[in-house]
Image 1: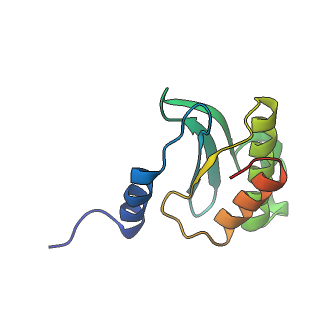
Image 2: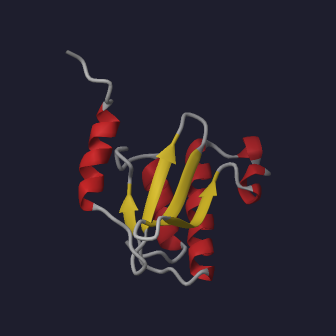
Length: 119
């Protein structure tokens, strides 16, 4: 019998058993679609999103067709890092959401680190 749960969803559940964000170290969660990439910093205890950025953010969307997907992911990571700095968030827990730490996910994480986030 086949399950309706995909491999990524199984990996995601396995990761989320161990990773949780709190006020001191919120969780940086990444979602990747075929076209866009989204990232948000979440306090799981309160159930609130503290900061978010995506390729649909007005700061990045204006660059439209100029950037490839990896460059867009870097821009999202940099923007999210800057937003977190403004809100006083320096340390986060990285949640790759079941995606392989490679390509766009790695580019976003590296850019967030360069912008000042620690994980």
